[in-house]
Length: 149
Image (cartoon, rainbow, N blue to C red):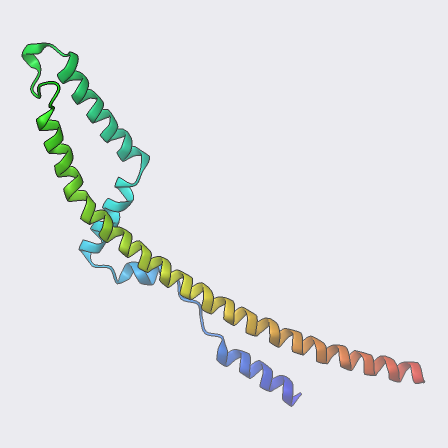
């Protein structure tokens, strides 16, 4: 009985509540970090790609085959389109990098938490196996005594 109490006390001391690292991480983000993550997620979506593709296709088509009097960015240079495209790239690139760094930090925190949970589970499984082995030994002893009678 005494050993069982020690084992149960031991498992109670080593087992701490699991913290949701996703919630904890989001609570510690600044407004600028949240903005960077929001932009990174949106820019990395198919919706954003379709918007940029459609905008570029319409712009280039209009200024290539549209009425000459209404073309505002002459073919073949498309200087204004190149300027806006480069401006979008220059502004989004650092924001995406910041967002990806934040996502990487979050992934590392989740991986570390998963590792700690796996270590706890392994320790608990070992404790259960030790307990089961002791029970098996007791059952074998009881069966031997019953057989000898």
